[in-house]
Length: 632
Image 1 (cartoon, helix red, strand yellow):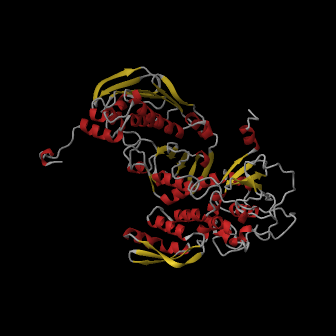
Image 2 (cartoon, rainbow, N blue to C red):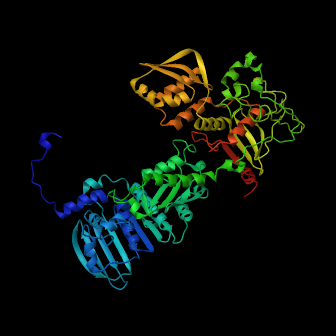
Image 3 (cartoon, rainbow, N blue to C red):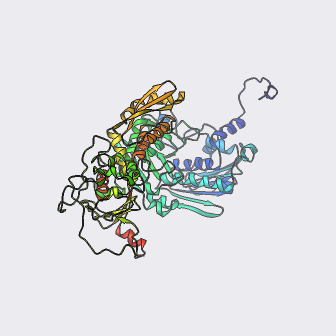
């Protein structure tokens, strides 16, 4: 701004009422949806049992709200359109524990200052009164005949403020925002009948007495609402309840995340953070769940007077609220995920298998000498390269896995085999002799294996997926990379010991000053993960790396950490587990597959990898029948 543009010095003076109202309207009345919100909240505060809303041109042409709540007499109507006049609070103590939607007494005055505003009301259903206010000026006051309740009509919003009018979006966009606000309010009050009409037709209707799921089914597709999970948690006179979506139905937009605090729809960052934390490891970073959560607590523990439009709140004990909401969601998810069908106990091979002492082929002393397969062997994680380390123990001191030494070979009865040369199978079963990777096959493992509890292992598909037959007759497919990631992540989280491998010749990594600071923050954790690092000015010397990482992968991992591509230690563990895990395309012998399944079955949050991708996809017999159209 230039000096010429600065106005000359003016004395301080009180602003005229009309200008004060328009300034207040800029805070309260942002767009037609703001008008709808304020008027419907007034109807709810009036204890209305039926609320009808009519829109035209996205609300800019018309917003009309009619209810059957407590009406007002003629003497109250003129006060209702004055600023700071309200029946909802009278003392400072009431403001500290406000239980109504509105309490400031400025919404109607603000709306009336930027529109053609009409209000008609009757407290008894026999006599009523109506006022018309045009751009803040009272134009008429007259008696009317009407039923008990209040009807407010707002026409030509912002007609006297062209600068505000040009910032409105298209009628379709404004109509959508009005519909969203209307829906959020309807979800908080299931005992009230809500009706929305737009463009001369009924758009939404919520009947009194509907359940939350039934109301959500009006606006969300059946594929979402039918799979919603009910949650409920309470502690210290605080309660959270509602419905949440299954991680498998996550979506790319966050437009189905709804919160209400003591019946008031809010957009709260703390609640959103609790939701994201509860879904952590179950969703990809670009995915969002469906959530409709309602929090009830003592009004003295929440401040609703922190936002001009009352869209945000502040909690006295944020830590307790965060923990309560997160716990409610986690408990709901834990009881609904597909891995729960496999049981919580580790899985074991049948006790009546004929032989003992089978060892994983990758642990044979001569395996490393098979030069044609050296590359395949080098790519395998520490779990398969180190003697009998197994999947479960690959991050700690090597120990025999359940299926490497003591487990019997998993060999079912023989059955006639088809001529594979004529019709190759769509997957390579575990018993097949693969000429592609003999280093991980052994003649002693002649068939797929059965795990005693939960499922039976059938074989491997595309050297990436493990096929499982579930006890209840269903079918499941497990991603070996995602499962191994989860196993390694849990080990890192619980023991933070990946083993260490010294380097014959230390590697050097250049350090930017910002990377040097980041290294100081992560130094202790990196040492626990198996790194031996020495900072020498503008470079970092790497003397040892975690046992499951090649030097090149270790260097890449360090660069990512120091460049702050990870936000916290969980992200560090997730990145390292991804680097060390089995990759897609790596064949597994039956005992290797069973060792992986055994280790995975004992993991927490086993249904998803640390990055949020699903580990297991399952189909019940009914699901399979539907896929093959055997049932209608």
